[in-house]
Image (cartoon, rainbow, N blue to C red; front, side):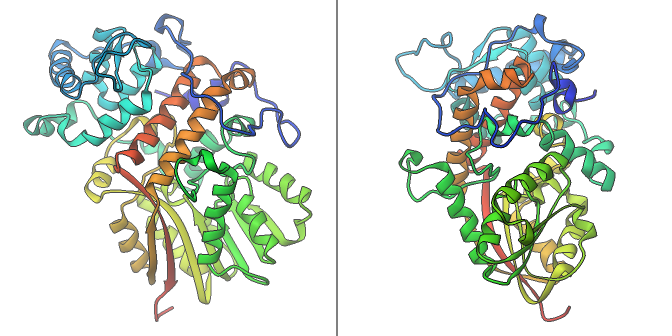
Length: 446
């Protein structure tokens, strides 16, 4: 099936590009809310074909899913009362509105079906991130060991069309980052930084998200040794905040992106800051890097590269590095065995959010960087900081749902995006995921 949630068809009308800053820009964190309720009968089947219809799973699969998943939900204490009515024991609860559809979807498509059931309004929770955190923390025990060998019954391989060839990478980036700059402005802070912040202390309400994002950027710039006169290459522009901050230090920045939407707004912001002479924004694939640089920085870019192209990515990093140069990476990571399973599986995130992407393990990064002739000099983790960043993003997004609707995104999209943010937050809260800053340098042989 196609995934129109990641194309302009996800909107009832095109979102226009507004002047900077957009009027939807969020200045502070909002109050947590829930995405709008959805009835499956009202879902637009043209935009959301796999949400609008309940798949045919067969009675055996449905019964198996009901037995395994139902028992797991009960065992974890997730079966509860209607949303808004807390049982005396408290805690996160999952409320089924259409149990038959819920178990049919899981029986046929596993975790993709679980997510699509949420998009269809077949289940809800008044603590979505809490439910998903409990599930993520117990993921290895959800399915009994003897049944794990039957995994092929409910998982499928990743579509070949999602591979990150040069054309594929452009299409995959377009399907996420070119949705609408204004959409991202509804939940990011004014720096428009779409990666983990680093906070001075928890809870994060004692400092702004923008300040925590600048702390993260400054650590990366320090790690890479960026100062006056540094020739800096950035792979993955985002909306330009790191390039702006590096240029303010006196660096000469070349920054690469495949997103036309991001490039346009990054150039506007750079021009508004008077730093156009110091920053060159290029629509260019990392495989086509030209020149040599004193420092290279890439923030949460490796996850979009795809496992087949990690050798090309690290080779490109090393090739761009001038003698004695430094590479600073920020990367989301997961355990190695989990990565291997995920690499062979089409997931909810790869279907609806990041086509072609794969989160690497620390072992995979070490292996591929070493094969390219790079040494790891530092490796520090900040997983709890990403959980907090995602919590703030999710609160901002749900607090500004009217702005999302004004942009033309429908209620199913709103539930999908809320689910994505909560799902990601749960991954870090449960330590299923981590985020790390690494310093690399080349080996003795060039």
